[in-house]
Image (cartoon, rainbow, N blue to C red; front, side):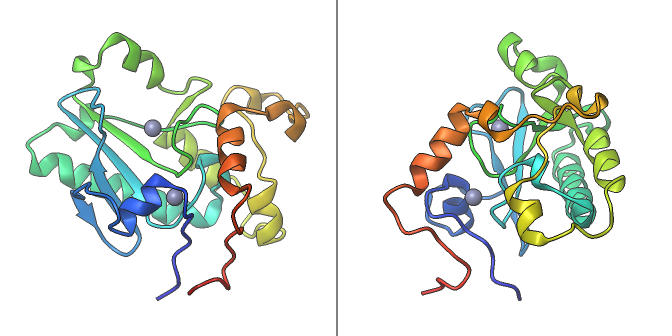
Length: 200
Ligand SMILES: [Zn+2]
Ligand SMILES: [Zn+2]
């Protein structure tokens, strides 16, 4: 079994590691599911990879099976609760519009119960929230192999669903100083940066 990537300061990694009181609804080697602490509807799950992946923009074609599995588990969990999966709203935040920088799929059902603010936050294919279909299409259109794992991880293209329609309009990193980035940077300053070799 491959060693899982964890980030010490990440609350979702702590949940994966059993260091929080959160009781998972589902957990296996690759995926963990738990309830959103501020549910937007009757059912509101967060489906996360157990690996620390920062957000949906970091995914590539090799993650298609993972994303499909996240959807399949969501479907199963809703069906076990007699909820109608076909009506559920599923999607990912698109950076920089996320509060927790660990990839998570929001599964909200039924969408009719979603309150006004949440309706804005989880608006499908907005600048800040993308659907499974949009993401899978993006991933499947990517080249098979990223040029280099390091490069693809550190300088993943950040384009919004709408911005991506305009080619040649890539934003450079200096324009993306966001609350989330700042938070992430602060989390690493003053502590030893974790590397894969640091397993003790
Ligand atoms: Zn994490
Ligand atoms: Zn979220």
